[in-house]
Image (tube, rainbow, N blue to C red):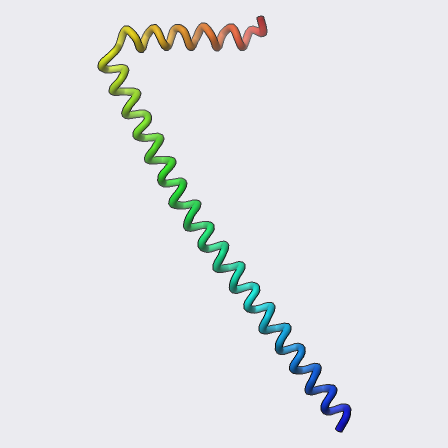
Length: 86
């Protein structure tokens, strides 16, 4: 009888551990799925923000071509100074 009781207790413990492990795996899978969904949404938002920024820049360049040229020349000059190491 004692061996049977011990076997039953071991079986119950194994079942509890298995159940806990399955719950943990399910929670991790759920969290991973949610994180992937959020990352997908944030990626889409970033893509939309980039497109809006490009459109705004195009509009500014179209409306202010001389100022845009001056900004481009200034930025090019600064970059060349930074890259030359002087």
